[in-house]
Image (cartoon, rainbow, N blue to C red):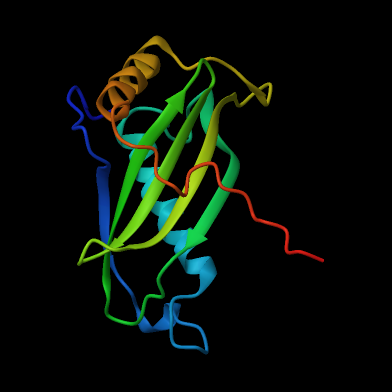
Length: 162
């Protein structure tokens, strides 16, 4: 685990990615599935980086329980995006995060909100984070606790009028 003893009071930068031509759909912009792939690769690295995922030999691992993605700006070939994460809450066995995909100009291209639980791999049941993991999550929440909750957090898909 990398020591993340200090977190800043801003979403944590995870990675920078440039949109490749093979990721585009027939409309010439990034396929919906590719947004999810990019978020997934970034969150996997983040979970390992802060010690929530100890690799394939671990006795517990983070499991994605829920995900909600908002697409706000189309991305085209050659555009570069930054992927960031902000902690919204954590509890004994879960963490609630929101990820941002931003253009180089800082515009939000997409967000994805995640609920992740710590799961014992032998029992396939949730279990508490370890003391070290709880300490790291508490530091992250302390840094992010004063940030505004993004308007995309907690959204649901509205049903159209019939």
